[in-house]
Length: 301
Image (spheres, rainbow, N blue to C red):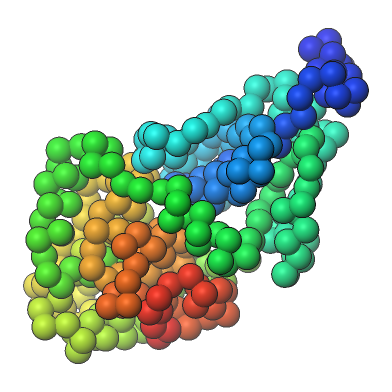
């Protein structure tokens, strides 16, 4: 049975007796939150009133396998962002009456269809969206900038160390729910890929130092590191759990180069301070090719 507040809000909205809104669903880790926030801001700059649905974090709040927590960290990472949270009744009305499914949603792919950018309020943007690369990259650079106050003392010390390391390379090893093949990301990164990537930087840089970031640090220590061409020139960053992934993203971004894996943390980190002298390695996989249009110097291995 629908509540009275639902019925009243529905009548007011559909009758245009209250201002129409764009409601955007937020979910996932820090990079997903950044992407979905960016989507909403494409409408905000057109003068639309944009609200964000945070119910994922209240009702689910974990990865696909329910192993690692997913908190709403966007405003911890970027506290200066303008943000309006959708109310529960707003979410219920908009999801039921004005739902629009994203063009990059499993089972409903509409490659190259950017008609959602022409949506008018009232609308609820759910599912997953791919945007034109030029538009997305411009908004990314405009919206997201680091403020040192987001780091705690330990992370700040490591960040300073990374900045003073002339040949720092971040290695993102995404495991967790991407240990197996997943629609959006394809097959997981292989051992051979990481071996090639480490060797690439051994050959390219005078004295590379590798910082490993992973949601499964024990696996990296016991299974991955012993099989890589390293000679003590590495550190496994173990300061942050999945509840502080935004701090890992910040540290990754301050490394001079990046070895990415499936998922987006390594790539988002690379976009901060991207330049023609930076090397960013990616898996040679069709699911990764869209990054050619976003990174200045991607290396596919």
